[in-house]
Amino acid sequence: MTDLSKLRLGTAPDSWGVWFASDPRQVTWDLYLDEIAAVGYVHTELGPQGFMPQDPDRLQDELGSRGLKACGGTVFAGLHRGAEALDQAKAAFGREAKLLAALGAEYLVQLPEQYTDMRTGVATQGADIDPEQWKNLVAGTNELGRYLFESYGVKLVFHPHVDTHVDTQARIERFLADTDPDAVNLCLDTGHIAYCAGNNLEIVKRFPERITYVHLKSMDPAVRARALAESLPLSEAVKLGVMCEPPYGEPDMPPLLAALGDLERDLFCVIEQDLYPVEPDIPLPIGARTAGYYVGCGLGPVRRWPY
Image (tube, rainbow, N blue to C red):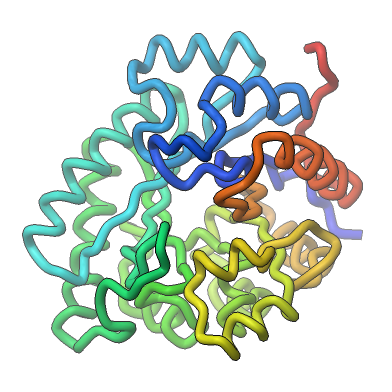
C-alpha cells in the first residue's frame, strides 16, 4: 500500500462558496476560519486576494488562535495580454507573496484569466489565443515566477482552469513543455482537468517533477454533460453542482492519491469544491464529510476540536 504520509491535507475558502474578496452572498472570513477549525483542518489557503485581513500580524494571530496555518494563496492574471498585464501581475502577486512569506507559506497559485464573467457567465473575450498571446503567457509566467521567488522566496504554481486558455490536457502539456520548471510548476486541479476530459493520472506520470501543489476536486460527469450540451459557462455549471463530494464524481481518487504518494515529496493537497453562490449553512457539513473521506484514504493532518 502506498505511503500517503507526505500528502498534507488542507482546504480553501472556495469550498465555503468564496470566489470574491467581498460579496454579500459569501461567508465572512472569520466565520470561514471558525468553521474549518471546527472541522479539524490545519492548513488553509487565503482565498481571493483581499478576502482575509491583509495585515500579516493580525492574520497570523487570527490563524494561530484557531490552530491554523496558511499553505498558499491565489491570484488571477491575464498574462497573455502582454507587458502591461505582467506589470500589473507583479504588483498584485507581489503583495500576496509578501503576505504569504510573513505567514511562513511558500506557494502562490496563478489562476489564468477566465474568458467568461465569474458572476454572470457572459463571454468577455475569445476562447482561443493567438501565437503571440501564447508567447506572452509563457514568457510572462516565467518572469513572474522568477520575480516572486527572488523577491519573496515564494514558489509560483500554475492552475489550469475551465473557461480559460489553459484548460485541456493538450494545452496543459504544451504549457509545461514551454515553461521553465525553475520558475513555475503545476497546481494539479483534479476537478478542472476532469471537466475538460483530461487524465489526471497521465499528467502526474508524464510530468512527475512538475506536480508541486494539488487541488483535490471531484467533478460530476452527468452535470458536465448537460453543461456542454447546453453550452453553459463554468459559473452556471457550478450552480448545477458540477463539482461534487468524493467519492462521487471523477477522477477516481484512490489511484490518483497513490500516484501522488509515489512522488515521495511533501505535497499540499488542498480540498476544493466550487460552491458559489451557496447558503451559509451548507459548506460546513460538506467540508466535514470531505475531510473525513480523505483522512480515511490516509491523508492528514487533522485534529480534534477543541484543540
